Each structure stands twice: as C-alpha cells, then as structure tokens.
Length: 359
Image 1: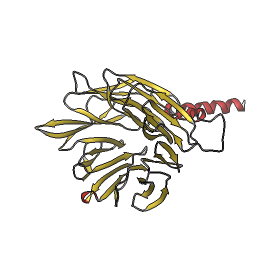
Image 2 (image 1 turned 135 degrees about the vertical axis):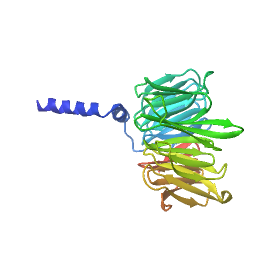
Image 3 (image 1 turned 180 degrees about the horizontal axis):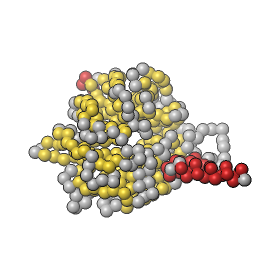
Image 4 (image 1 turned 120 degrees about the vertical axis):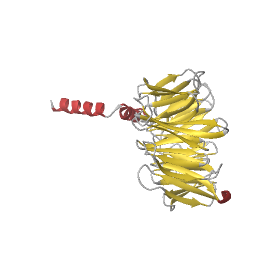
C-alpha cells in the first residue's frame, strides 16, 4: 500500500511540473548513452564548409549546418539529428527548446534536445520567430493584405493569438516566460526617415498594452527581460521600456557602432558597441532586476556571450570571462582561433576551425 501511495504522489508531482519540464526530464533519460567510454568526445568535428554556427539548447551544444541541426551531449554523444530541406536556417533557443525556421520556407519546427515537439506551416515564408520559456512559439510572415502577420502558438502547437501589422515590417519578436505577453518591433519609413514601432500585447487581448515609436532608429532585436521590462536594441540606441511603455533607461551610440548583442534564459542582456573610433569596445550588461553595469575592453572580440553576471569574449585563441564590473574572472587558452564562444554551467564551448570544443 505504501508503494502505491508513493507512486501516486510521484505521478502527481510529475503532472504538476508542466509540459516543458516533463519534456526536459524525458530528454535527460533519452540522452543517457547506451555505452560509456573514457573519452569526452571533444573536439566534435564537423564539415567546416557546411557548418554555419553553434549555439546552446539548454546546456547542450546545437550545431547548425547546411543539412539541418544536431544536438550533442556534454560527452559529445549525438542526441538529435534533424534534417532540413532549406538553407539559411534560423534558430531561437530557450529552456531546452529550439524553434527552427528559414526565410525561404513556410515551415517551422519546435525541437527539444532529443525529439521534434511540433511543426507549423504558414501561408508564406517565416520572417522571424521566438520561443518562450514554457514552449510557446511566436512566428511572423508577410502576406498580400498585410506587411506582417504575427501568430502565437501554445506549447501544444495550437494557435493562441494572431495580429496583423498593415504598415510596418516586423523585425523582431519576444515572448515573456509564460507566453502571456509578446513584444513586437516593426520597421517603417516616414518622409525618408526610418522609425521603429514598439508594441506590447497580452496574448489574450486585441488591443496593445502600449504602442510607441522610436524615430530615427531601426530596432534590430527586442527582448522581454521580464513581464515588466522590455529592451529594444537599435542600430544607434537601446531603450528600456516598462510594461506600460514608459522609458526607464536609454543609451546612445554611433551608427554602425553596435557589434554584439545577446541575452540569456534569465533575462540578462548584453550590448557591445565600439567607442573612440573603434579602438575600444564598451560592454553593457542589463540585468532583469537591478542596476545596469558597463566596462571597456581595448580589443575587438570575434565573439561574445553572456550568462548571469558573467560575460565571455573570444579574441584569437584566447577567451576571457569577465564579471559585470569588468574584472577578468578566468582566461582560457584554446587550441586554435575561436570563432564562437558559449558560456555553460560546465565551463565554455567554442567553435574552432570546424570543431566544437569544450573547456
């Protein structure tokens, strides 16, 4: 009887975890290798001519190539190989989920670290997309009747919300963690001047929570750092909005000075831009809560990444990991020049000469 009660309690806990967390647990069990070896499997070699880039899905490397995407474990075991019949693959990754799409295809796929979870087939090729912490998905595309159509799907793949933008082109989407809100940036031109329209919706409402314009700025990326903190990253300035559209912070930089931008699963955002004619790079960390911090480095990195309060820069075969205050916490001397650096709980992953390495 006691065993039955324990099993019932375990089942109730499993159901209460939510769909994404249950799927993450299932991923973990599917990822256990059938055989064990003494080697960690790195460097993990790829065809350098077809390899596009490497990123993280959860804490596992996701490799994008001409043929599709693949996910490997911390020991370089292949967890997923997903073939695609298009080029120019785009990926949005969050909390062990990856939304895969292309501007040349009407299809998009939601993947976990080991299986396909959902697929979407839109009217026209997908322009941009985003996946939320809970597995909700946002996609946009253009039609004859509207410059942009934006759709939000539940984690199950069922359509939840839809909106049409008649005048401007959607450049970026960002869902809050639970998928209850969506921030949209859309580009337009008025009297030969570029402007960006920033809109925040609740995904159950037809009227926006706020709708404002940034004149003279092309917003390239929008980030929901929290339910009440929206970050619009533009080509010449970055603006922080509250959930009612009030500007809470702003930083300006020269045109073409922006060189890196990234965010992690906790809502920490990194912005890097050139200063003093490009002789220095300013790194700005915008946390979901608390004070914005910045520091300068006197070289142009090849790659940058943020995770929590840590920021990594790769230059040549050296990776330096900084605190948000600008102190060097750790330095890695890699085997070859580093094209991409990724911070993980285990250290760093790098892309070097067509190989994924771990340090």
